[in-house]
Image (cartoon, rainbow, N blue to C red; front, side, top):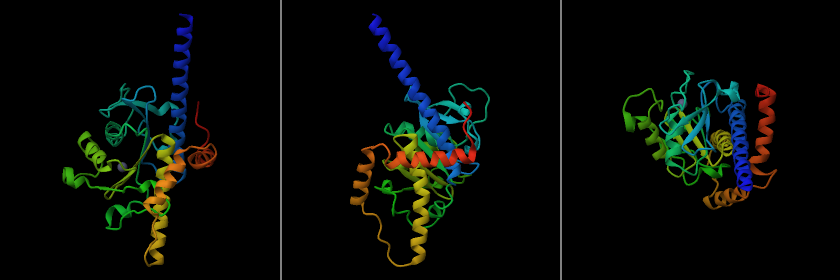
Length: 259
Ligand SMILES: [Zn+2]
């Protein structure tokens, strides 16, 4: 009996440690995206709740560069807060809820109006990979007009969120026409990393196009090898190394989050 109690206790402290780690990454992810110029006063990042996969964690409506741990709220898969305490919430939270519903493999979602990516949402120039191996199989383009006609372009209800998640399919990035993009990953860190490198790849592609001539894109075979070496997760490599650097830069600019 005593053994059982001990095991239950250690399990619950393990999940609360995991929850705290996800909150820390979520707060830092907000600030990194701001520091890297992926978001400004708008845009948001969420995490699936490690204690309950039917819920996700997202800041109250606030500029990402200012988000503190106490701003993080819990939401259900209907996109509504679990406890409505009257705090303002993001109108585009349905991007997150509907992607989590459609993609059980996704644990982190970023929505931004990442400036170099937006031109690729309004031209016929496809956003193809130079460095971003996660652009395969493809980077689809979602248009609110196809689903809802004339709107303010915001994904402000479940119907639009569901249609966006369908357009995302099994990919990692979906473009929103005249608006921005949504990027997903198996963790908050991976989603943030991909959002930063989606913007970086868009910049590289713009520069390559200015040089003129045909572009030698990253081949799908090369991308698959890059993705599999990253998923081996060696400490100090890949996302870990970048996270450590981006975190220290974000803290230098936005300060330490309040405990
Ligand atoms: Zn938006």
